[in-house]
Length: 232
View 1 (cartoon, rainbow, N blue to C red):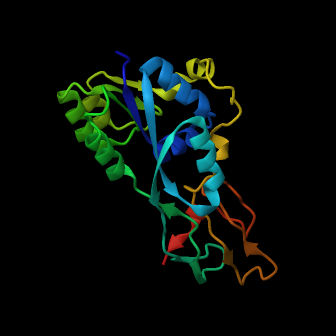
View 2: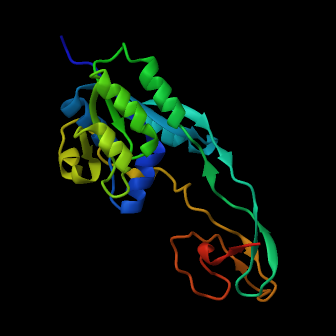
């Protein structure tokens, strides 16, 4: 009888890890890898729903992922002090929040009789008890953490050796035979994790704080990195 394993993917964790690593990940190849190396028949991809990203969801669905959505919330504006002039401003914080962890865990337990074993793709320590439970029931095939760097020790311990790291498997994933997409990488997913600020500064009336990402080191007087701002 064919093996029937399910994959449960923490989409935000996977995406942000590879963005941070600066390593491209081909999502079509990843699914082919899961099918061929781990006998995955269904791959649930948990992700926040943002209407303007519908094309992303359509692409992932076309690859064969089953998407599970949760609505996202936008974090409230913050009051900060401009490091250049000392004035206080209300800023628009362009960061969204979406926590799909509970949805993923409920899906794993709710469908436990439908699959042979589960593959958990995440590095989040919040899943340690879930992984322990799967191990106790002999229902864990593997934890595939996006990277060893940043992977929770709790999760790694709970896996009891049944853990591997996707960033170390990139060559194998890239060379897996599968559907001929092969061009879609993590770049199709916009960076919604990085806060940006738009702040007018009276000290330099002809300039404004442009949208500034925390990963940039912009040193012009009115283009300072967001992490240099202090909360009031």
